[in-house]
Image: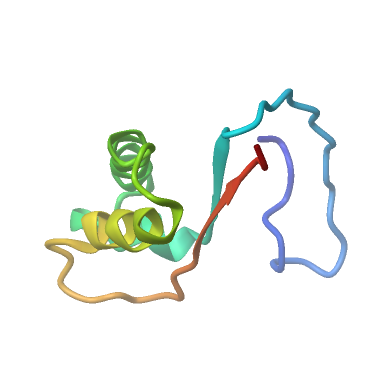
Length: 93
């Protein structure tokens, strides 16, 4: 929050944020195309669907979780208008 989106501008303002993680913790990185492809194309709705889906599938095997979450978010969308990327990272145990 408070930073420019990556890849949008030739000069960026990025802020550093330190977070504590523990072995087994997971985090996700995604492009805006994922949250804009949900029904209605509203980012807020798409973000909410993404959070709920990530929580619902947080215990799924890593290799299955990303495709399941992306499928959840895209379900019901008429068509995808932008690139979609969802990357899940798990902290080594």
